[in-house]
Image 1 (cartoon, rainbow, N blue to C red):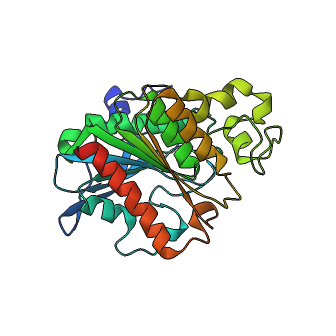
Image 2: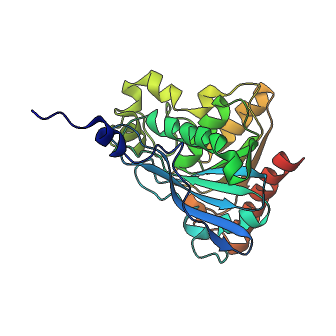
Length: 289
């Protein structure tokens, strides 16, 4: 058997994301946009990428985590009601002086929890390592998540001590108890697919995946927004998480949107814009005060 040349074996893999050159940036009115930047290559998995919206630095950072029931979704999607905005929501955040990193993570068909949380944490580490090149200040980071991404964002904010805060839109906070249409004994739910079994069958894992069970007094400030008529993620997820944070001595602001279902479906257009603006103002206040 022929032994491969050691130099050949070194050159075959692509450069590690920690050292790989950054791709060329597009310019959008003073904002640099870098799409599809690899930040990790988990063993046996696809490369994980992020998109970057970079104003003049050193800029505070919004780390955005997309929704999709942990099963699907796109890193550059802030939900159905913002898809036709021009300029889009991430451009608006960057125009307000906040750098934005929209991150991939492994979905439940690829890996089980805690893999997606590990991925988001790895993205934060990569952004910190490359912060000088990117012109961002990772010491001023707010994590922002939508739906299932909000659950991951909450867990990250509750476990990383240096984050400035969290913005959660209609996010699950409790995978252990019945809420709305969710039943922890059902093995077919998105929660069960995330955990690898019905939550009731793996209670320790379900608890570890529940932000409500991870609340502590040193948690950073949270902004939680939820539709009052949400039929997919009951509004009590946000209400109970906000209450638990306050009871623990942490800061939490809760905004319930009248008439809104999941993804702000059914809400007036102005209401959606108002929630976005309130979320932006909350994040900017945390990292510029």
